[in-house]
Amino acid sequence: MRESELFRLAGLFRNLQGWYDSPAGQVLFAELQSTLAKLLSELFGYYAVQVGSLNTRVDLLQNSPVGQKFHMSLDPEQGSLAASPLALPFQHDTLDLVVLLHTLDFSHDPHQVLREAHRVLISEGHLVMVGFNPFSVMGLGRLALWRTRRVPWVGHFYTSRRLRDWFSLLDFTVVQTEYVGLRPPVQNLRIQQRLQFLNQVGHYGLACLGGVRIFVAKKRVLTLTPRLSPWRPRQRVLPVNVAEPSAREASHARAGRHLH
Image (cartoon, rainbow, N blue to C red):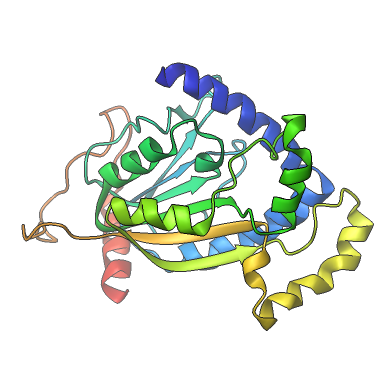
């Protein structure tokens, strides 16, 4: 079941990449990358994973100060780490940061995707979830084009209220919400450039109408068990064929965490 889900998601994400390569998609993704660069630069730790790569060139973690970064492809035919988001190939309580790129939008079991993210995150680890916003021009486009069964309109555009309920049930606390993409998905680059002024609308309290929404949530501490001392080695995150961070990388990440 998980293998078939992986192949299904791989096909959807190839189509999503095609849409993001379009004029409207390029504009939206540039804004998304810029916003994520600022958000992720403030989240520190030892290990991070990006789930839902659009292709091998998309590195949303490039501005992250986390020591070691993994990029989990949804395409089993690629040479990178490929696994279903329903069963992440990481040990319990080992990752400091999980980035889900449109993974909930297209998964048949979004609850399991969130449960897996919760499982692999350490206490106080961060989940960054990128998804389409139903209350936006993108959302209106979905209402009109959903029956075409084309990406991205075939995806699930979950409301903030529903997602916050899911986060709460899994003991996540939402610490920040950002929106990008106030311009309509018009497939004409010249029109997109003329509509750039709409980005200023966000300064007047209308940012929540952005086509893409970013949640930053923190995994709450549920037990009174003391955390490991900083000098004790942490357990291996992945199987032995994947390299662990060097001492220098780990030291840099630890310093960044203390500063935070």
